[in-house]
Length: 55
Image (cartoon, rainbow, N blue to C red; front, side, top):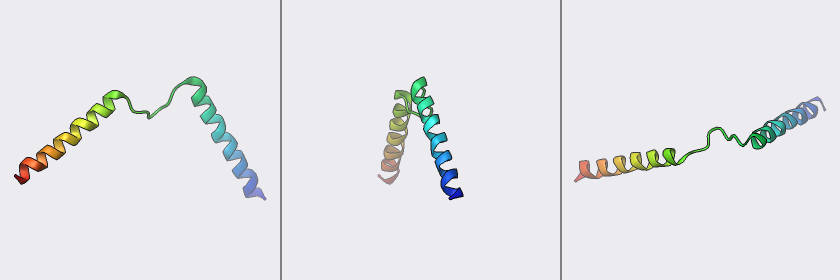
């Protein structure tokens, strides 16, 4: 029973945190266009580098 109360408190705490994040329109860790562009460039560098190395 004590674990249930502790778990309910933890769930309530997490819900408050998520509500605070949503209310403030701040989503830490979301990827921007710059992040996606960087991933695309790195992927192309890896693929083309492996292709040239193997050719």
